[in-house]
Image (cartoon, rainbow, N blue to C red; front, side, top):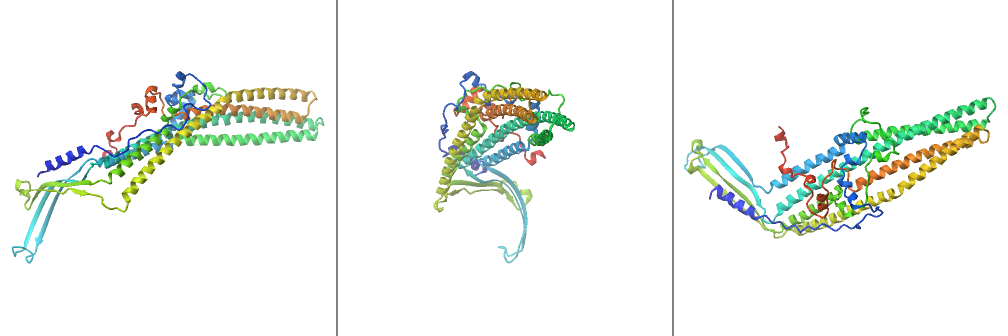
Length: 510
């Protein structure tokens, strides 16, 4: 027998080991209604242009915000960890996949030994050399029942799961940066209003003080005006601290200092919502939630558990391991590669499970139970996503009425403040009435800002809940629909097989 025949036999057995014992996979039916609760009945044509199919560059229209998103995606540490995890699982997949291939080593050795006269068969002392060179097939398991192939499939699904987790982190980061950006704008505008209120309170306090000094106002009027001024000062300083904290939180999300880019247009007012966000059409069928990265991640976890069942089943069957070598051995280096110096060895091993105390059966039970756990996790992920979308529709269905009501209240409070102010100047109103009117007027301004921010925040949250934010560009809607039906993920969103990518280990880098 020669080495060619040994490797040919191993290759033949390996070629026949193409089957696995994994259960057939069927995507669980979504445990949710076909349509989102509370969703407006927009046209399907508009709906198909929405959410995951709308890249963040197209959803966010504010150029300053786009610049901040680019900085955050390049520098945020949580996203960096998620990307490094992808690389780690890609390497782990390559390790598992390598077990399908035989390990072949070339070994060479030299030894010199002395045999004592008493131990020598010739009765004479002997000192000699042994030169050896061989190529060997090391412990290659023939994957007849698909155990290693199932483990390879499991590692591949875990890699895809981590890739989808990275998309989830990316989507969350995009929405978090956008929400924090508008939170900074909210605190900035609220601070501006508070500073205006503080200035008016100061002017009113000074006016009452001058009147009090000449006896035209009572001490009560003066202390009411002073208390109002101090209260406004406290509220202004509190908002100033909140504004700084918001900027610090924003810098943490960006992973860098917040740049003051004077070349970019100034920020939009919160009330100018249509200038900063694209329209969010509804009517999207709930089954397209299957394209959300966190749901795809849960499905890949389910597929990995399914593959693990195949490996656990295969462990019940005999395994065949090959060890083979062929080479040359000689006592003289000049004769090492002569035909008479050839050596070979072939030692296949068959392992047949007989008794293991129920370990294999328990491992199979664990694998099956893990699949049931992943099914429940997958269904819960869909239910959670459905609830998030429905919650945002519940907000958006009422937000316009809330905005209109707050703006009407602001107009009324402004007019009330003007009337009370004129009445006070005419001597028909008290200083307390002026103070209360002023407080209510500025409080109404703050409430209008808050409800405008709530509208923007709800649209951003709806965009994320529908699966948007992880891609900066649009992709094919028909391909996405196919993926939602359980067909292959669109090629432009499918992570590449890490085996085909250039190696990045220390040897290559060196």
